Length: 129
View (cartoon, rainbow, N blue to C red):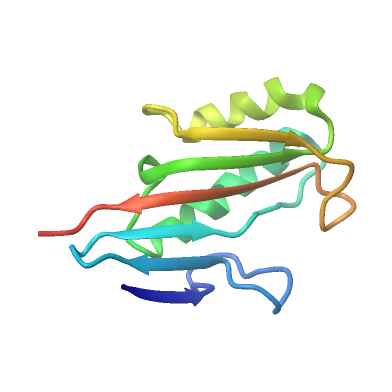
């Protein structure tokens, strides 16, 4: 098993130099597990921020040969749970297949005061061959 940590140059860069955006755990069969750090995005509305978050997640996954269809677990942090429907509508635009396992939490605040949503995912990438 090989573990690689980093932030791919082809995706939006992290807001701080103190964490890696992706941990890739390479499996013996050639597949991999990708653990993405929580992602936030700019925007005035929850929908705008959610769209930006999923665009970043998509770019991070693509940098590792994965897609949103490879997501097996998602954790969402909302600063106001009453926005769950708005968040879910945008999420549904990006995650169109069988839904991954999921947890959603309401939190009092996030890393950036203006952030209303943060999302972290785990993806399973099949071996090529």
